[in-house]
Length: 143
Image (cartoon, rainbow, N blue to C red; front, side, top):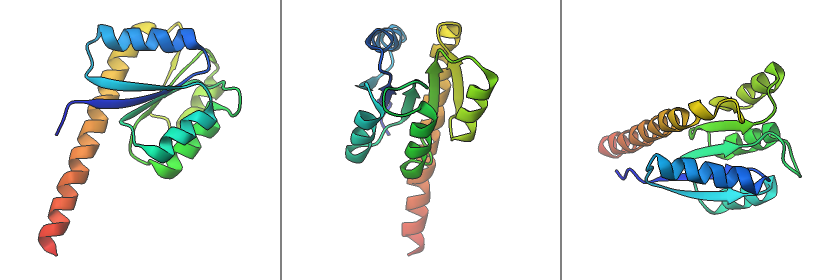
């Protein structure tokens, strides 16, 4: 199994996308990051490929991050979803978790937690992928 990760980052602010890209490069992640600047663009990517981690803003021009998270969960029940949003209210955090998010970081306050959270979520994603492969092998052995 490869240590190469596929990440979809959805944020309409290009400066935030550049910051995320820079942070991932600094931590030397083996990953390909796709950026979507709207929910519609993100949903289009989801129709074409799968991802190991989703990083979402809560404020998007065409849909809330909460709604996008719910839509992602309809097709991908396993991959972790992390919010990285300026919305810092407890209700925003709770709604994100209820919609299927794994974690919720507030920008810029939680920049110091960003890298470690990404690392943990990618490890979680890798373990989930291994379990899927193992389960498929067991099923094929039974049949």
